[in-house]
Structure formats: structure tokens, C-alpha cells
Image (cartoon, rainbow, N blue to C red; front, side, top):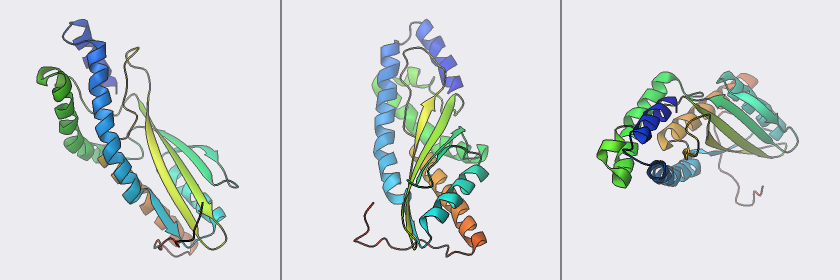
Length: 206
């Protein structure tokens, strides 16, 4: 978050707040994001489709590439797909703006509780200087596949010694997951497969 780095550097240099206090605030933000992010993963991170595993992997890769993500690893055998993008991708700028309208006030509230309202004004939810890393695991066989997706934030640059949140803001994670599934469903339709996810069998194991 380039803007955050610049603003917080000014704040620290002015001796208004210490790096330790900034880190404590970011830890608190990340902890709350994690709680809600974990629920997003439970609700939106997994889908079970009636499509062969090898097809699911290929169509997932195509979907992520269409969304501007760079594929780092494509495990056609083990089903592991790793992808990366510069934030806010795979969200658009307008989608990220919608995220910021909800998540930034919440972030400022958490920071204010830790180090005060005046310092919280310097914390801005801007995606620059962050990468989004995404890991997907596809399991299954010839008839159906379970796809599980998770993501993380990776900070690029910034203030030395400053902690940076690792969990994607929950609303961004939710919108991103829905966007991935929308692209994947379109790929299924184009390939002539059933587009609706189905209930995972109780005896299904990964």
C-alpha cells in the first residue's frame, strides 16, 4: 500500500506514533480480517462440479488468466494451481472502490482502538504495493471435481520493519471468489459442461 507507506512514514518521522504502535495496529486489523476471511473461505472458497479433474484444472487456469492473473504453477497431476496478480486484480478499480467504502472505515475503527483516532486518519486502504497470491487445489476424478481456493496479500516495498496485513480484506475476498466462479462457470458453459455446482458426497475425500 504505497499511500499507507508514505503517510505512515511521515507519521513516524514526526514522532506522532512509533513503528511498534503501527505494527500493533496492523496486527489488530489483520486479526479481524482473518476472522471474517476464514468465514468467506468457508462460504465461497469451495465448489464441487460434475466435471473431470483435468478439465477443471485447465478451465480454472483459463479463468484466472482471463482475469489478469499470472499462473505460477499449473499442477495437472496434483491439481495445485498457483497464481499471482498486482492488486487490485482480479478486482476492477470500481470493485475495489466498493470494497474500500466498506473496509476502510472498519480498518480505521480498529486502528483507532489501538493507537487513537488522530493516527487512524493516516491509514488508507489502497491496493498499490501489494500482490495477490492465489492457491487452488483441485481434487476428484473422471466424473466430478472439488475446487478449493484461498488467497493472500504480499506486501511489496514499504517501511523496513513494518508489519503488513496478510489476509485479503473480507469483502474483497468475497467479491474475488464470486468473480472467479462466474468466469469458471462461463468456461464450463463454453466447453459444454454443466454449469451448476453440485452437493459434495459425504464419502468424498481429498
